[in-house]
Image 1 (cartoon, rainbow, N blue to C red):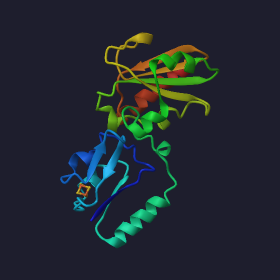
Image 2: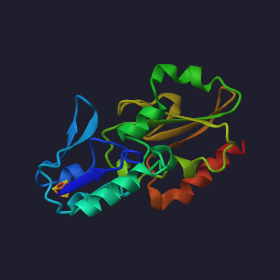
Image 3: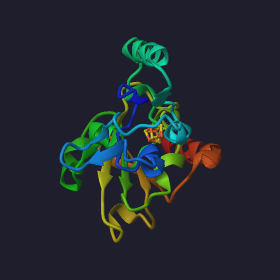
Image 4: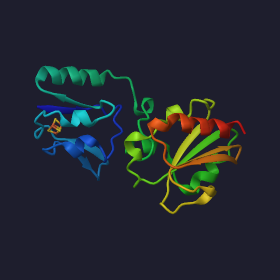
Amino acid sequence: MAVLVNFKICDNAKECGGIAVCPTGALSWSDKEETIIIDNEKCISCGMCEKECPIGAIRVAHNDEEYNAIKSEIENDERTTKDLFVDRYGAVGISDFFKIDVADISEKIDKNYFTLIELYNPDFAECLLKSIPIKELTNDFPADTLYYKVEVDEAFSDFGISELPALLIFKNNNLLGHIDGYFDVDSKHEMLNKIREIIKK
Ligand code: SF4
């Protein structure tokens, strides 16, 4: 019948699991428009895509009544992707919000407050679904803390980092410390403790 995507919370990424499992091509990715495309002529309401979406942005309707109810629910949804921060590394919608170039780092850290710079490589697919939401990582920081992410190649080792992804923590143009390597949701407390040690300095 029909699939609906709640783009208010969808991270609108090429790596969407719904696209990967859709047997009919009803969900696809457009490189040109950089968005998920829906073709409901092809949707058979099998529900496979819905199960793949970790945040419930993909919804499948089996009849007109369900379609209208889901549509109305989406229209009235007041959340945005910023409320979710489901992943931090590769998803287009969220990434673009914070993304800066390597060349812009020095300009961004020249501020009188905390600035977090996350260095990542988009080929590290593990990060896409399992990384710790940035909102949780910034719990201990003041409200005016800034966060940016920078795509770098695998060989990037500036700032003394040994491994990607890496989180650099700056204050007043000084690098207070960095955390290297990937921490998934199960390692959240380890990561948060490392952050606390750095910001105590
Ligand atoms: S319900 Fe099935 S056919 Fe329809 S978009 Fe989802 S996976 Fe594709």
